[in-house]
Length: 97
Image (cartoon, rainbow, N blue to C red; front, side):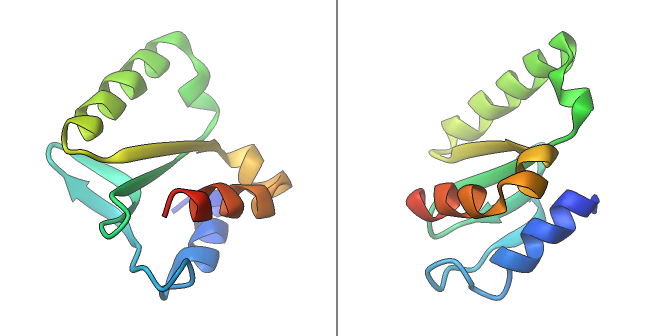
């Protein structure tokens, strides 16, 4: 796990978000997502700098559409957002659970 993933995980593991179970590194179909909350049908992805290149953005978009076909909502946050605005990231996750 990246440092950003470790920080976010410390705030969402052990049913800290509305009592919902969240899994990390969860396989969904042909992909492994950073975090998954089945009760909320929510996928949470943290993106490092490599995700902002055009080719990677296209891959992420296809991946998100794949998840949406399973009825899942995908939230994406940058690593920077987690470090600088953790409370806002957590509020956004809370709103979608």
